[in-house]
Amino acid sequence: MPESSDSLTQCTFAPDFAQLIIRAIEADNHRKIYNAVTHEPVSIFNVVNTCTKLLGTNPEIVVKSDKFFEENKLQPWMDIAMWLGKMDFVFDMKKAHEDFKPQFHSFEQSVNDTIPFYEERGWPVPKYGISIDKEKELLEMN
Image (tube, rainbow, N blue to C red; front, side, top):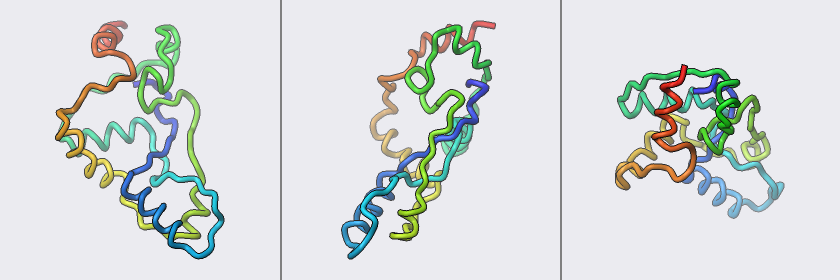
């Protein structure tokens, strides 16, 4: 995990997003344009901790310097999912909350409700990011 893994991003849970769209369609009057995310900002570290808790796993978390990632030509997001480098990627949901007063699931509940989706599919290996072999190679480096 990169040492800059405390950068923040926001996620959108599809059922909550659908609720937001329905409320917008049903509203008589609203501002028309909104940022549409359904969770407060989280870091990749928070994502990993939430997932390991819910899945009952205990992975060894290895932290490497950002320089290590640069030297090995690993790019934020494209090579390491959810890692944004030293940049926060957050949106202001104030207008949507004021206009629609949505009741979103917590981040933890959203992750928990998403687990069966991946279990039913046999936890497919992502098509993006570094390969398992590349990850093993990098972990063996000092």
